Image 1: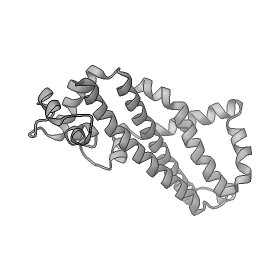
Image 2: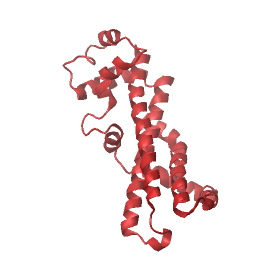
Image 3: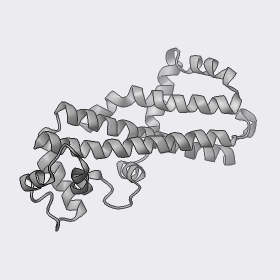
Image 4: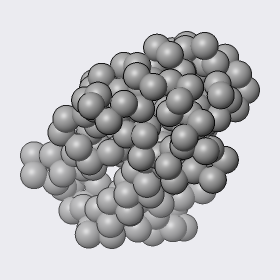
Length: 207
């Protein structure tokens, strides 16, 4: 299921990463050159190859690292670990009703890792193909993978500045780093919110 949703997101991920790269190129070389760069990258074979490379960037980080980046946690990073707290904040749900419906999931004695596993098995799996759950899952994967691509771009930019040949592109200016960092922060916030919404949507649909 996740693989299919990731494939559906590939074009959007390429577009988001391309937009960040084009803005970086604008600051690095001047915005007058951006249309020419854009035309070269998205015309014919060059566009196909470039899009494939961008999507490849999103797969360089393992899922566990991606989730830690999104939720800024080293352990129990998945939002299903906190489904009890998320449900308490959602106005669509009456917490007493959902906790009585799935007592094992919302048991206060359950560990966070147990709660995530129980949420996945008892709540998510029965409704995983519903439109609302699919849409929120797709959004989470979109922003999560976009974030991972931006992080890889940021790392590659730093490595290029220290190890690459400055005569090819010139020295990397601070604005390039600023664009990548701000873009990554926005993607992280979007992925964080989408992940939380994904978990609660599954509960709302399943109840």
